[in-house]
Length: 236
Ligand SMILES: C[S@@+](CC[C@H](N)C(=O)[O-])C[C@H]1O[C@@H](n2cnc3c(N)ncnc32)[C@H](O)[C@@H]1O
Image (cartoon, rainbow, N blue to C red):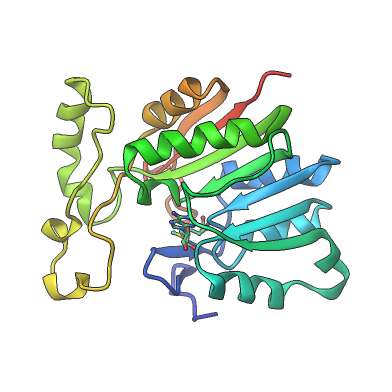
């Protein structure tokens, strides 16, 4: 695993941002809920598995899934032998992922949905609703339009949201916000940051019952609006 930055952020192997080495409140809620559950729980877009490892220590049985096989290898190698029986790793890419209906008690997707176009966010959350057991919960965190270089576009985002744009944070080409255009060659062009309202709407459209929807900050800036967090349940 690469070294963490001073702020505790570890670069991913596939230029899909950084894994945080500390957990935000919604991810922490997932680890507690999954740890207390008898069923299987899914960590989707797990990177090197910061949330999976904490949930395993709390007694959870985890399916850890990421599009990059290197991330899953690191997670498996970091898992202590006594917890390995509670963990399986899967390489797959949203939205082309299929699990059996009613197979998870809890699903975490932390800071990965904003890499998808809007239709794929909706498709993925609808699939999550199908994969959840009745009464099960999704724990979703997305980067918001108030973080990163694209925070400069936050005022435009608010105008598009007020005008009824379904995905007002969608940035077709992030290079317009980056200082060094050359750095973007290996990076994704688009990004879809979203606020708690947008994430909650996608959950409601998938038939889930929203229990919590709010902003949360990075661990070192807890009061800022860098992340949107939603917890939503499937009817029991
Ligand atoms: C910014 S990191 C977040 C890691 C960790 N969940 C966290 O909250 O710190 C995004 C992770 O999501 C994964 N990811 C991005 N798009 C994905 C997709 N379409 N399907 C599966 N995994 C994806 C990346 O490989 C990366 O490991």
